[in-house]
Length: 164
Image (cartoon, rainbow, N blue to C red; front, side, top):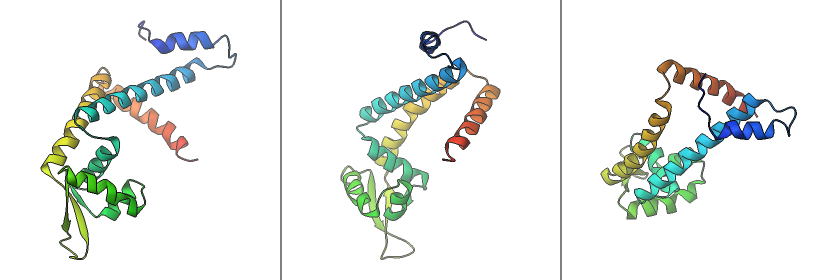
């Protein structure tokens, strides 16, 4: 156990006398998880801004990259949980910027596929690298075993959360 303190330690100490049933470990874990999520969101927002991307643009490029750099608009819409008609405007903007191009499908000439361009790949990867670097900087203080344990513990919590 470390003697170093963070903001959450003071937060828990302030609230423990006020909320008599407060479990300091639950409050500490939830407050730290939220603070970490907020921190990574701010890093992501700065990174996207530095690369001239909006969140929805990066999300689309990320989804397309995860499909091997090529997908049907309907598949992208499904992955992004959007109505199929809504993806067109998003793709129009990315195409104007040179980040994607629409091509006829190799399997069916009536179908159009969206393809990630080199420029789109570079913008997506550049923004992603900044966030990835911060994740490694923060979690790199833990040993491989500790990171695996943290991931396993969070998985157990998320399995319950996803049951809703």
